Image 1 (cartoon, helix red, strand yellow):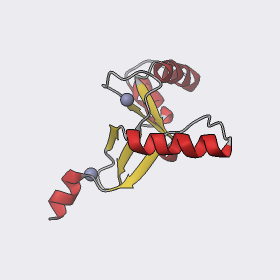
Image 2 (image 1 turned 135 degrees about the vertical axis):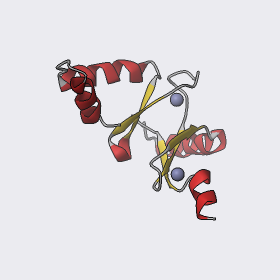
Image 3 (image 1 turned 45 degrees about the horizontal axis):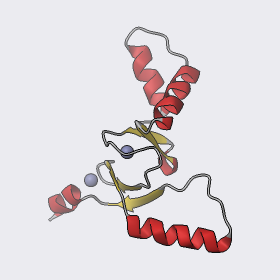
Image 4 (image 1 turned 90 degrees about the horizontal axis):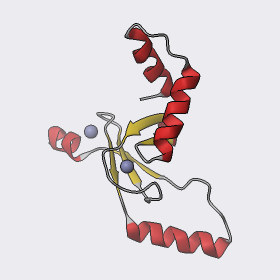
Length: 110
Ligand SMILES: [Zn+2]
Ligand SMILES: [Zn+2]
C-alpha cells in the first residue's frame, strides 16, 4: 500500500488525515520494524515477524497477485557483506527485492 492510499483510506473513514502524518507514522513503524518500505513499488507492507530492525530481508514480490512475501537469505546477505566490504562501500539501504510469481499463482496457472 502506498502512503497516498493509506491517507485516502483513513480520510474515507471520516477523519481528515494529512499525508505528512501518515509519512511520519510510517517512519516510526519502519524504525521499529513493523512495516517495510518496498522501494521498487514505493509502497509499504506491514510486518508480523518478530525480527529486529537490523534483520536482513529479501522481499518476494508477485507480479500476478501483487502479494509481497518476506524472507531471509543469510547466504546471500553474507555474500553481499563480503562484496560491499571488498568495495569499501557503505550501504544506506540494502533491501533485496525479487519480482516474479508466487507459488500460489504458479499453481493456479498449472
Ligand atoms: Zn519484517
Ligand atoms: Zn501471486
